[in-house]
Length: 323
Image 1 (cartoon, rainbow, N blue to C red):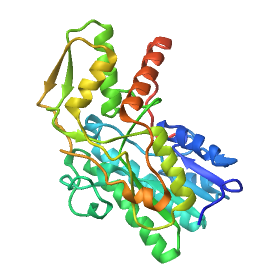
Image 2 (image 1 turned 180 degrees about the vertical axis):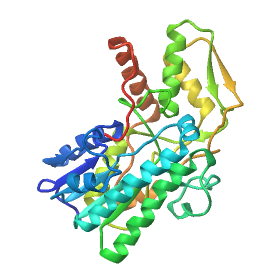
Image 3 (image 1 turned 90 degrees about the vertical axis):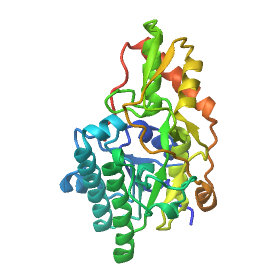
């Protein structure tokens, strides 16, 4: 059943964040008129009362808020990442059930998949092993929310759906070195090395690990398509359906940014999960989502956005938390 968003009151947690801003644009494009965006300084989603107030008289909820980061943050603060993400998610789902929301959409993470998942990752493989150790606390916390959603559907009839997006990138990404993911981290490193006329740039790992990336605007489109027309309990992948090694990714960024120095690989640092690529066929089958943006176009858009930001303000954007 296709839902009309025009007469729905929609709560979007994390609506001011990287992905959230694009989801808001997509909701408006699809006719949404009444969107609530709680800010983290006014609403702590780890607190039940805050969740209750944010969700009062709400029809739909899109739960994007998360505490996220790259390998560095996952190594440094695994307990915080587990606690914050599971607390926010459980509270939001609980309140959706108690308050009788029509539907809740929860965004999970590719980090929930087992470390050695066969490529391409199929949704049926989600429980076939433990996640890669460096991001397991975050991945398990997110995966636990799927269990709670399915339990609430069975016991209370809550219409809760769960999406598994691959690594996102695009304009507006988090470029803070303490919390950024691989693409913004690399763009920032190469930019600063280029501007300082350095002869090399240091990169973590061996470069052998592979990743798949989804342009943030495409991801937002997939989320809203699912909100409108997907009502099943089974998790669904959101991705582009391609794979690139970190070495090839670095080479692309170096070339696009015109950096002439050497790339030095710090093999004492972890690679993370060996391979990542999603089977995206279910998203296309269930709600007609197929990513449109080519990786080269999306990467160039992201680089140009970052370079413009640095020219206009000699500092990266604020890191995203939950707001």
